Length: 172
Image (tube, helix red, strand yellow):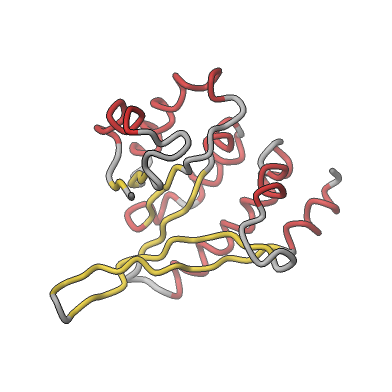
């Protein structure tokens, strides 16, 4: 895909902010953070095929993450007391652009949770060892780590137990 085509496809995407509620008591709750979900205007849902295409190479992953970076900065400046949970597919971690993105948003790391998706990356066998190293690096950058949809896809109970010392949030 050319940069123009990639940007055109990314332009179809938008972000949805799903509130994460902290229950304080039987009658009291507050929004503690938002999980950022990617949606397609055309499809009205998560565009899995497009997303996998976009994260498959360095250039398109960079263009996608440029949009994420704009969103993160805007949100953090607009909502200084609320955190974000950002989904990251394991496959993205092989790209330098993902690490540049994480470094660029590191100034907000105390308010951002990086949520590893349950999707098994094509390169999982090759990168299985790297997953632990990636999690350690993300922790060192100051981000919290979450795993979603436990016992689904990559996020098996065995995977959780092997990485429990690096995980801050587990979501069933």
